[in-house]
Amino acid sequence: MRILIANDDGIYAPGIRALAQRLSSDPRHDVFVVAPDRERSATGHSLTLHKPLRVEEIELEGNMRRCWSTTGTPSDCVKLAISVLLEDPPELVVSGINSGPNLGTEVLYSGTVAAAMEGAFLNVPSVAVSLGASGVHKHYDTAAEFMARFINLLPEVHLGSKTLININVPNLPLDQIKGVRVTELGLRLYNDWFEKRHDPRGKDYYWLTGHAIEDNEVEGSDAHALLHDFISVTPVTFNMTDRNALANLQAIDNIKELLGPSNKSSLNKIK
Image (cartoon, rainbow, N blue to C red):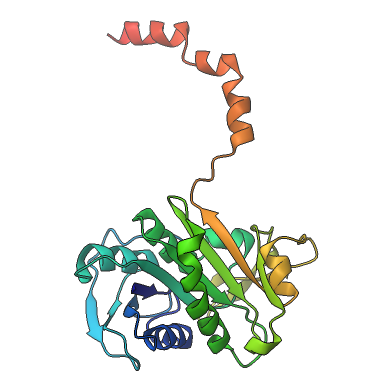
């Protein structure tokens, strides 16, 4: 299988190295890596439009076919790889392993999830994988091993168009993981605020800080699963249309008359 690996923590982050080394150790896979040259966390699905993208081919330890770093965002990396850098399109995009979870509403901000979503936009089966952040030691090997096993099941998943799989793995040794749960996105609310600080010149600046509120997460959500030492596997699609609100809006006849006769009269006067 041709696998493209990207991330938002940067090309030299330990998570992407662990993932690329584990997947490339399987002779059935041809692994390519395209990742930012520095950390690009919480960039969402941003693309670089107003400056050039620079690319440098590098070497990483492992059996990867080719590896590149770019000055772009995670989404840039996947788009550039599929459009230009790879001779043949990948059969799978894997983004990660992120240092820290991407749960619930965090997927809207996450560069890790955005890279996988870019793959899904381009009709390539895509997976984002993140590791819980608690603890000094990071068990990236646990998440890498799970991914090596999980991708063998992907042909049975039958992902819909523009859908990705978002995986969060507890930061534990593999034998301490309680199991795997197929979940939905949780709430992932934050108690956050901007802390006001002063620079050496006496000017004010602000630093976003806070922490996640875990009390409101319900069973069946990704956040609840991770909190209880289960791996969460969540299908995510970019189509965020609120179907109930859509039906309610369609039922309001007056909404169609907002640009009614008075607007037409105004247009006639302009002519």
